Image (cartoon, helix red, strand yellow):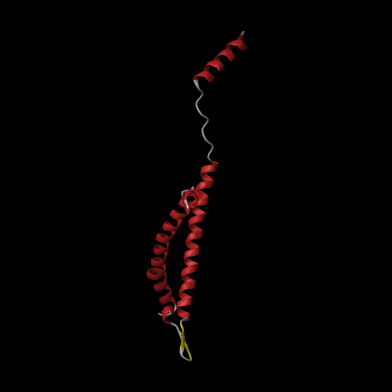
Length: 127
């Protein structure tokens, strides 16, 4: 049992697992923001454009079953908007990381030893 717990601890404390946990937490918060964007801003605008149609209330009655296809349409729209927002976010992060890679690092200042060796080389050249 001790070996199992030790292996689990090693697994749980690896960097990838911790990064994934942070990603899930941030993703949940981001999902709330996007859901608010969809429900509070975009869907009312779509409702005005479509003449006040509320997708979430659309349904069809088949025998005793009710098919809520309006909620399905709403979820598709939510998914597309969330996917678009994530695409834009990933694109921005990639652009920022690309700029960081392109910027050449300034050469480090020469050490005292390098300065002394350069002076010795110059003195030897001049003789």
